[in-house]
Image 1 (cartoon, helix red, strand yellow):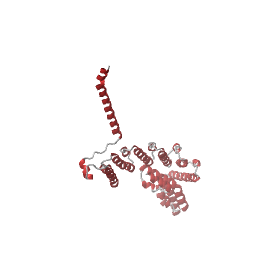
Image 2 (cartoon, one colour):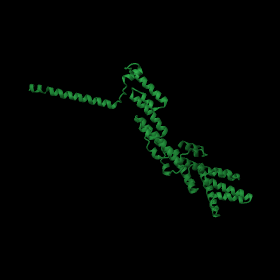
Image 3 (cartoon, rainbow, N blue to C red):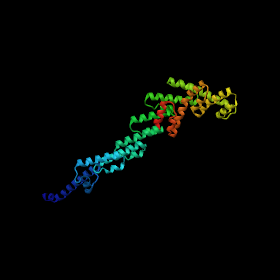
Image 4 (cartoon, helix red, strand yellow):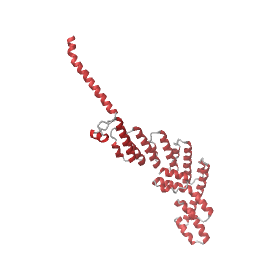
Length: 327
Protein backbone atom coordinates (compact mmCIF):
# COMPACT_ATOMS: atom_id res chain seq x y z
CA UNK A 1 0.00 0.00 0.00
CA UNK A 2 2.83 2.40 0.88
CA UNK A 3 4.57 1.61 -2.42
CA UNK A 4 1.44 2.54 -4.40
CA UNK A 5 1.17 5.80 -2.49
CA UNK A 6 4.84 6.53 -3.16
CA UNK A 7 4.29 6.01 -6.87
CA UNK A 8 1.49 8.66 -6.92
CA UNK A 9 3.56 11.36 -5.18
CA UNK A 10 5.00 12.88 -8.43
CA UNK A 11 1.50 13.00 -9.96
CA UNK A 12 0.01 14.70 -6.88
CA UNK A 13 2.85 17.19 -6.77
CA UNK A 14 2.34 18.01 -10.44
CA UNK A 15 -1.40 18.55 -9.94
CA UNK A 16 -0.77 20.86 -6.97
CA UNK A 17 1.77 22.84 -9.01
CA UNK A 18 -0.68 23.27 -11.88
CA UNK A 19 -3.38 24.43 -9.46
CA UNK A 20 -1.08 27.00 -7.89
CA UNK A 21 -0.01 28.34 -11.29
CA UNK A 22 -3.65 28.62 -12.43
CA UNK A 23 -4.57 30.53 -9.27
CA UNK A 24 -1.65 32.90 -9.72
CA UNK A 25 -2.54 33.60 -13.38
CA UNK A 26 -6.20 34.21 -12.46
CA UNK A 27 -5.21 36.58 -9.68
CA UNK A 28 -2.96 38.57 -11.98
CA UNK A 29 -5.66 38.74 -14.64
CA UNK A 30 -8.24 40.05 -12.18
CA UNK A 31 -5.82 42.65 -10.96
CA UNK A 32 -5.06 43.89 -14.47
CA UNK A 33 -8.77 44.16 -15.24
CA UNK A 34 -9.37 46.46 -12.26
CA UNK A 35 -6.32 48.69 -12.60
CA UNK A 36 -5.43 50.97 -15.48
CA UNK A 37 -1.98 50.22 -16.87
CA UNK A 38 0.74 52.77 -16.21
CA UNK A 39 2.01 54.48 -19.32
CA UNK A 40 5.38 53.04 -20.27
CA UNK A 41 8.16 55.61 -20.31
CA UNK A 42 11.53 54.65 -21.74
CA UNK A 43 14.74 54.96 -19.77
CA UNK A 44 15.91 57.70 -22.14
CA UNK A 45 12.72 59.70 -21.54
CA UNK A 46 13.11 59.40 -17.77
CA UNK A 47 16.70 60.60 -17.92
CA UNK A 48 15.63 63.52 -20.11
CA UNK A 49 12.85 64.47 -17.70
CA UNK A 50 14.56 63.86 -14.35
CA UNK A 51 18.28 63.42 -15.10
CA UNK A 52 17.92 59.88 -13.74
CA UNK A 53 16.35 56.69 -15.04
CA UNK A 54 14.76 55.91 -11.65
CA UNK A 55 12.68 58.93 -10.49
CA UNK A 56 10.80 58.64 -7.20
CA UNK A 57 7.02 58.23 -6.98
CA UNK A 58 6.78 61.78 -5.65
CA UNK A 59 8.73 63.16 -8.61
CA UNK A 60 6.50 61.33 -11.10
CA UNK A 61 3.33 62.48 -9.30
CA UNK A 62 4.49 66.09 -9.21
CA UNK A 63 5.47 65.95 -12.87
CA UNK A 64 2.06 64.60 -13.97
CA UNK A 65 0.21 67.11 -11.80
CA UNK A 66 2.18 69.92 -13.41
CA UNK A 67 1.37 68.66 -16.90
CA UNK A 68 -2.30 68.39 -15.94
CA UNK A 69 -2.28 72.03 -14.87
CA UNK A 70 -0.48 73.13 -18.05
CA UNK A 71 -3.05 71.33 -20.21
CA UNK A 72 -5.91 73.09 -18.47
CA UNK A 73 -4.13 76.45 -18.78
CA UNK A 74 -3.35 76.02 -22.47
CA UNK A 75 -6.88 74.82 -23.23
CA UNK A 76 -5.49 72.21 -25.61
CA UNK A 77 -6.68 68.63 -25.13
CA UNK A 78 -3.62 67.23 -26.92
CA UNK A 79 -1.49 68.45 -23.99
CA UNK A 80 -3.09 65.73 -21.83
CA UNK A 81 -0.78 63.31 -23.62
CA UNK A 82 2.16 64.92 -21.78
CA UNK A 83 1.00 63.18 -18.59
CA UNK A 84 3.46 60.27 -18.59
CA UNK A 85 3.10 58.15 -15.48
CA UNK A 86 -0.46 58.21 -14.12
CA UNK A 87 -3.00 56.84 -16.58
CA UNK A 88 -5.90 57.77 -14.28
CA UNK A 89 -4.78 61.41 -14.15
CA UNK A 90 -4.38 61.43 -17.93
CA UNK A 91 -7.91 60.13 -18.34
CA UNK A 92 -9.17 62.78 -15.90
CA UNK A 93 -7.47 65.39 -18.07
CA UNK A 94 -9.26 64.15 -21.19
CA UNK A 95 -12.56 63.95 -19.27
CA UNK A 96 -12.26 67.58 -18.16
CA UNK A 97 -11.86 68.79 -21.74
CA UNK A 98 -14.56 66.56 -23.20
CA UNK A 99 -17.02 67.45 -20.44
CA UNK A 100 -16.58 71.20 -20.97
CA UNK A 101 -16.76 70.73 -24.73
CA UNK A 102 -20.06 68.86 -24.38
CA UNK A 103 -21.59 71.63 -22.26
CA UNK A 104 -20.48 74.33 -24.69
CA UNK A 105 -21.73 72.55 -27.81
CA UNK A 106 -24.68 70.59 -26.36
CA UNK A 107 -23.26 67.63 -28.28
CA UNK A 108 -24.13 64.22 -26.83
CA UNK A 109 -21.23 62.65 -28.73
CA UNK A 110 -18.78 64.55 -26.54
CA UNK A 111 -20.32 62.92 -23.45
CA UNK A 112 -19.70 59.48 -24.96
CA UNK A 113 -15.95 60.15 -24.81
CA UNK A 114 -15.94 60.44 -21.01
CA UNK A 115 -14.30 57.68 -19.00
CA UNK A 116 -15.69 58.52 -15.55
CA UNK A 117 -19.20 57.02 -15.35
CA UNK A 118 -20.53 59.56 -12.84
CA UNK A 119 -19.23 62.47 -14.90
CA UNK A 120 -20.65 60.90 -18.08
CA UNK A 121 -24.12 60.65 -16.52
CA UNK A 122 -23.94 64.26 -15.34
CA UNK A 123 -22.76 65.30 -18.79
CA UNK A 124 -25.72 63.66 -20.54
CA UNK A 125 -28.13 65.17 -18.00
CA UNK A 126 -26.74 68.68 -18.56
CA UNK A 127 -26.85 68.37 -22.36
CA UNK A 128 -30.40 66.96 -22.34
CA UNK A 129 -31.48 69.78 -20.00
CA UNK A 130 -30.12 72.46 -22.33
CA UNK A 131 -31.55 70.82 -25.44
CA UNK A 132 -34.94 70.46 -23.77
CA UNK A 133 -35.15 74.17 -22.88
CA UNK A 134 -33.62 75.28 -26.18
CA UNK A 135 -35.99 73.23 -28.35
CA UNK A 136 -39.05 73.26 -26.07
CA UNK A 137 -38.89 69.47 -26.31
CA UNK A 138 -40.01 67.29 -23.39
CA UNK A 139 -38.40 64.25 -24.99
CA UNK A 140 -34.99 65.56 -23.96
CA UNK A 141 -36.19 66.28 -20.41
CA UNK A 142 -37.45 62.71 -20.09
CA UNK A 143 -33.95 61.37 -20.84
CA UNK A 144 -32.48 63.09 -17.75
CA UNK A 145 -31.66 60.60 -14.98
CA UNK A 146 -31.45 63.06 -12.08
CA UNK A 147 -35.06 63.42 -10.88
CA UNK A 148 -34.69 67.02 -9.69
CA UNK A 149 -33.18 68.19 -12.99
CA UNK A 150 -35.74 66.21 -14.97
CA UNK A 151 -38.67 67.85 -13.14
CA UNK A 152 -37.13 71.32 -13.42
CA UNK A 153 -36.54 70.84 -17.16
CA UNK A 154 -40.08 69.55 -17.74
CA UNK A 155 -41.66 72.35 -15.69
CA UNK A 156 -39.86 75.09 -17.63
CA UNK A 157 -40.52 73.55 -21.05
CA UNK A 158 -44.24 73.06 -20.33
CA UNK A 159 -44.49 76.62 -19.01
CA UNK A 160 -42.94 77.95 -22.22
CA UNK A 161 -45.22 75.76 -24.32
CA UNK A 162 -48.25 77.17 -22.50
CA UNK A 163 -47.42 80.59 -23.96
CA UNK A 164 -47.35 79.15 -27.46
CA UNK A 165 -49.04 75.84 -28.24
CA UNK A 166 -49.07 73.85 -25.01
CA UNK A 167 -52.01 71.79 -23.74
CA UNK A 168 -53.94 71.69 -20.48
CA UNK A 169 -52.83 68.10 -19.88
CA UNK A 170 -49.21 69.19 -20.16
CA UNK A 171 -49.74 71.94 -17.57
CA UNK A 172 -51.09 69.35 -15.13
CA UNK A 173 -47.75 67.50 -15.39
CA UNK A 174 -45.90 70.41 -13.74
CA UNK A 175 -44.85 69.44 -10.21
CA UNK A 176 -44.53 73.02 -8.91
CA UNK A 177 -48.03 74.24 -7.98
CA UNK A 178 -47.28 77.93 -8.60
CA UNK A 179 -45.84 77.23 -12.04
CA UNK A 180 -48.75 74.90 -12.77
CA UNK A 181 -51.24 77.68 -12.01
CA UNK A 182 -49.30 80.11 -14.22
CA UNK A 183 -49.20 77.54 -17.00
CA UNK A 184 -52.97 76.91 -16.84
CA UNK A 185 -53.63 80.66 -16.90
CA UNK A 186 -51.37 81.06 -19.95
CA UNK A 187 -53.10 78.18 -21.69
CA UNK A 188 -56.57 79.60 -20.97
CA UNK A 189 -55.47 83.08 -22.06
CA UNK A 190 -54.21 81.77 -25.41
CA UNK A 191 -57.31 79.62 -25.88
CA UNK A 192 -59.58 82.60 -25.22
CA UNK A 193 -57.71 84.84 -27.66
CA UNK A 194 -57.57 82.16 -30.35
CA UNK A 195 -61.33 81.61 -30.10
CA UNK A 196 -62.16 85.27 -29.36
CA UNK A 197 -64.22 84.01 -26.43
CA UNK A 198 -64.41 86.46 -23.52
CA UNK A 199 -66.40 83.98 -21.40
CA UNK A 200 -63.47 81.59 -21.58
CA UNK A 201 -61.32 84.24 -19.84
CA UNK A 202 -63.33 83.69 -16.64
CA UNK A 203 -61.51 80.38 -16.10
CA UNK A 204 -58.26 82.27 -15.48
CA UNK A 205 -57.34 82.35 -11.79
CA UNK A 206 -55.25 85.54 -11.91
CA UNK A 207 -57.56 88.57 -11.74
CA UNK A 208 -55.09 90.76 -13.61
CA UNK A 209 -54.66 88.29 -16.48
CA UNK A 210 -58.40 87.58 -16.56
CA UNK A 211 -59.28 91.28 -16.96
CA UNK A 212 -56.61 91.74 -19.61
CA UNK A 213 -57.90 88.68 -21.45
CA UNK A 214 -61.50 89.99 -21.52
CA UNK A 215 -60.40 93.44 -22.70
CA UNK A 216 -58.07 92.13 -25.44
CA UNK A 217 -60.65 89.62 -26.72
CA UNK A 218 -63.28 92.37 -26.85
CA UNK A 219 -61.03 94.81 -28.73
CA UNK A 220 -59.71 92.15 -31.12
CA UNK A 221 -63.30 91.12 -31.84
CA UNK A 222 -64.17 94.71 -32.70
CA UNK A 223 -61.08 95.04 -34.86
CA UNK A 224 -61.94 91.89 -36.82
CA UNK A 225 -65.53 93.03 -37.23
CA UNK A 226 -64.28 96.35 -38.59
CA UNK A 227 -61.99 94.53 -41.01
CA UNK A 228 -64.87 92.34 -42.19
CA UNK A 229 -67.04 95.40 -42.67
CA UNK A 230 -64.30 97.01 -44.74
CA UNK A 231 -63.96 93.84 -46.80
CA UNK A 232 -67.66 94.03 -47.55
CA UNK A 233 -66.94 97.41 -49.12
CA UNK A 234 -64.84 95.44 -51.65
CA UNK A 235 -61.52 96.70 -50.37
CA UNK A 236 -59.06 93.79 -50.48
CA UNK A 237 -56.77 94.72 -47.62
CA UNK A 238 -56.33 97.15 -44.75
CA UNK A 239 -53.28 98.54 -46.56
CA UNK A 240 -55.56 99.48 -49.45
CA UNK A 241 -58.00 101.05 -47.00
CA UNK A 242 -55.16 103.14 -45.60
CA UNK A 243 -54.21 104.25 -49.11
CA UNK A 244 -57.83 105.18 -49.90
CA UNK A 245 -58.03 107.46 -46.84
CA UNK A 246 -56.14 110.18 -48.71
CA UNK A 247 -59.10 110.58 -51.07
CA UNK A 248 -61.36 111.79 -48.22
CA UNK A 249 -61.68 115.21 -46.64
CA UNK A 250 -59.22 116.08 -43.86
CA UNK A 251 -61.37 115.06 -40.86
CA UNK A 252 -62.62 111.85 -42.45
CA UNK A 253 -59.12 111.02 -43.69
CA UNK A 254 -57.65 111.29 -40.17
CA UNK A 255 -60.37 109.06 -38.71
CA UNK A 256 -59.95 106.56 -41.57
CA UNK A 257 -56.18 106.36 -41.10
CA UNK A 258 -56.51 105.92 -37.34
CA UNK A 259 -58.88 102.97 -37.77
CA UNK A 260 -56.73 101.43 -40.50
CA UNK A 261 -53.55 101.70 -38.40
CA UNK A 262 -55.37 100.14 -35.46
CA UNK A 263 -56.32 97.18 -37.67
CA UNK A 264 -52.83 96.89 -39.17
CA UNK A 265 -51.30 96.64 -35.70
CA UNK A 266 -53.42 93.51 -35.18
CA UNK A 267 -52.87 92.10 -38.68
CA UNK A 268 -49.13 92.77 -38.98
CA UNK A 269 -48.28 92.06 -35.33
CA UNK A 270 -46.45 95.42 -35.34
CA UNK A 271 -47.00 97.89 -32.49
CA UNK A 272 -45.50 100.73 -34.56
CA UNK A 273 -48.86 101.11 -36.36
CA UNK A 274 -50.42 102.11 -33.03
CA UNK A 275 -47.98 105.01 -32.78
CA UNK A 276 -49.22 106.35 -36.12
CA UNK A 277 -52.71 106.89 -34.66
CA UNK A 278 -53.44 110.58 -34.01
CA UNK A 279 -56.36 110.08 -31.59
CA UNK A 280 -54.73 109.75 -28.14
CA UNK A 281 -57.38 107.49 -26.62
CA UNK A 282 -57.43 105.16 -29.60
CA UNK A 283 -53.60 105.10 -29.66
CA UNK A 284 -53.48 104.09 -25.97
CA UNK A 285 -56.10 101.41 -26.53
CA UNK A 286 -54.17 100.08 -29.51
CA UNK A 287 -50.90 99.87 -27.56
CA UNK A 288 -52.59 98.26 -24.58
CA UNK A 289 -54.68 95.78 -26.59
CA UNK A 290 -52.00 94.56 -28.97
CA UNK A 291 -49.01 94.50 -26.63
CA UNK A 292 -49.67 91.06 -25.12
CA UNK A 293 -50.73 89.63 -28.48
CA UNK A 294 -47.57 90.91 -30.20
CA UNK A 295 -45.32 89.70 -27.35
CA UNK A 296 -46.70 86.19 -27.84
CA UNK A 297 -46.11 86.48 -31.57
CA UNK A 298 -42.44 87.45 -31.12
CA UNK A 299 -41.97 84.63 -28.58
CA UNK A 300 -43.33 82.15 -31.10
CA UNK A 301 -41.06 83.54 -33.82
CA UNK A 302 -38.02 83.31 -31.52
CA UNK A 303 -38.77 79.70 -30.59
CA UNK A 304 -39.42 78.56 -34.16
CA UNK A 305 -36.40 80.29 -35.72
CA UNK A 306 -34.04 80.30 -32.68
CA UNK A 307 -33.58 84.01 -33.36
CA UNK A 308 -32.79 86.09 -30.30
CA UNK A 309 -33.58 89.28 -32.24
CA UNK A 310 -37.28 88.50 -31.76
CA UNK A 311 -36.80 88.23 -27.97
CA UNK A 312 -35.57 91.84 -27.84
CA UNK A 313 -38.83 92.98 -29.44
CA UNK A 314 -40.85 91.59 -26.52
CA UNK A 315 -41.97 94.40 -24.21
CA UNK A 316 -42.82 92.23 -21.18
CA UNK A 317 -39.52 91.99 -19.28
CA UNK A 318 -40.28 88.63 -17.65
CA UNK A 319 -41.32 87.05 -20.94
CA UNK A 320 -38.28 88.58 -22.66
CA UNK A 321 -35.96 87.02 -20.04
CA UNK A 322 -37.57 83.59 -20.52
CA UNK A 323 -37.23 83.96 -24.28
CA UNK A 324 -33.52 84.90 -24.16
CA UNK A 325 -32.75 82.12 -21.72
CA UNK A 326 -34.37 79.59 -24.01
CA UNK A 327 -32.53 80.56 -27.19
